[in-house]
Length: 344
Image 1 (spheres, helix red, strand yellow):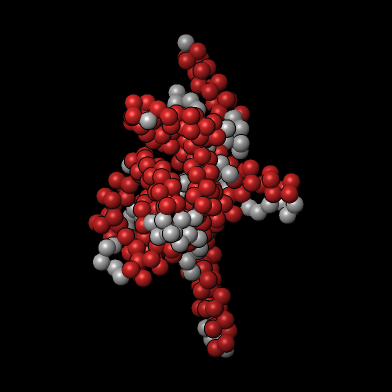
Image 2 (spheres, one colour):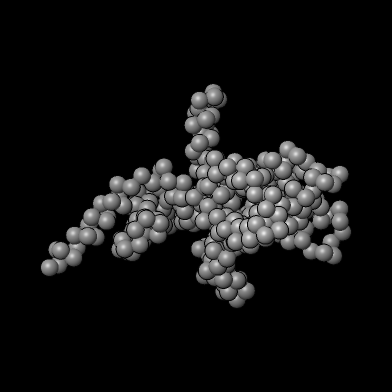
């Protein structure tokens, strides 16, 4: 009887191991949002563990994922023990050489200083940029800030978010294998369905525009808050200042990521209609409006954002369609043509 109960889980584990994660754009987004040390991220057992968690979340909720064994943590602790032992030996050698020339002592101190320097890995760089984006975006949204400073902070926050997205794309996908049309097409197809690419185009669309829509900072601010909160909670949870001032807001952000995504999707759709209304003003930009609606179309179809955007458009349809059928039925032909373009 025990074997019969285990068989379904064995089949599910086999299916999870055989799943094509590399061709699922959700896996790249999921893996990029996991904050673990670089030495753990390179281990195959750690990657396999998070692949099973991804499979449980998106593919098969009935899959049972065991927690990682304590042997892994002990293995991670071994290098620190060996490094402390080697540092102790190095200190002994330094003490024995104290009677030597002064330049030898200065040389040993110079070589030992890099070991205590801060290690700037990918996650630390992303955290620093996103924290900067958060601060500058908040400065741009404060009403009491002078207009010239607020407008500059608005553009700096968009540029910072674009750089963060571009850096994330580079670290995850690298650069094209060759600067030829076919290689560029393959590379573009691999990144077009990622959230980093869409936010890069989003920021590029508004930072190059004469319009200064502070409303556009809401998705940028939500994304920066989410990534900063994840980094702080995973790396500073033992610090007193974090526990006293930041633990409650960080826990709230991590438990309300869906709410932030819904808020961002509503903002992105509303911005599309604001750009259409701006076409009747002197600040109109037809190319920007067309590019942004192409981006909205991509967000509607790509899996990482499709669920939120489809819900927004369904809500708009339930509200607007009865009014059009009742008061402006002549618009049905134009709406049908727009829908054919949208779903094409």
